[in-house]
Length: 374
Picture 1: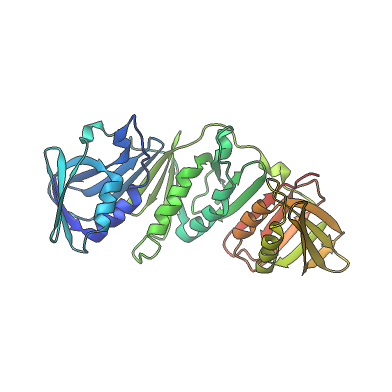
Picture 2: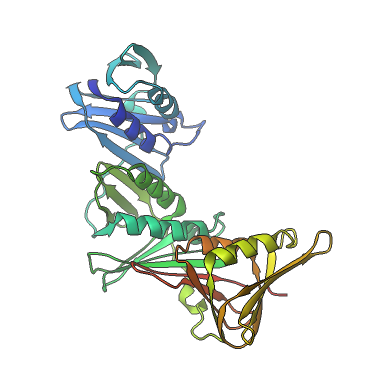
């Protein structure tokens, strides 16, 4: 194997592929990135057996071949190279890397030990705008369960319907985040994708955020038990989670008794201030909605630290109400909303509450939070 490429292209490819592998004592090959050069160009491939990332980079191939080297070491070294041409040559059990006056030898493992990544064929392909998808991912990833006692809750539901809409939903049973986007394909499919896969996709997309030549859409291809995200020169393949996603629609309130419109920035500041006095481990803040005086009273008290109350002006319709919420979940939901004004809806202190942005130009978003029952 012998090829040349720019340091910039190699660095970008490694920044995408070098973080997938995890330290695996039993399978050290998973800590490596596969470098493959052939007539089609140069590819960098990494996997942790759940996710596989392939990134094609432009380069001049003099001799085809493939070899694996430690991903983090390779990335860290290339990160320190000058912005010049990089020459890579495979000799025996190491690759030689030359760039300007810098030359080094990196030992690795033969490519024959690298896991085979089968191609995903067939299935339906969908196209989603990059900006909309990135925003949607930022609005749902945090709401997935962090443990795998219920595997389906550790993933994100992707539900494509025949109306050409894609619904992304995530819940840990304490809160729920849902985004609805428009797609270019009207075909129904339903799949649960691991949260880490979509977090990795979000990271990959962010690598290209300043690249004017980057594609404007992500292609999503589904098969029986795998999903592929294609973005320009990058292909991310992942397993999907088997099982049925809970019917979360039934917990979304159909009617409300109190509806509030408030300034998001002002409300976030107030919640952060009051949260300093919430009970340790309970993270509770109380919202008192006063329709007569058109104000929200946010309060918390702790026997050892004291108490705090902040009163904000708001537009309130309906009856007076009161609810106790986990302030961390509340702030997570508010952080996922970019609109200056937020609508808060509730029935009473025992039923789920709903947060939605006042303005939603490109998508529909709602965040459901379960109250803390006294």
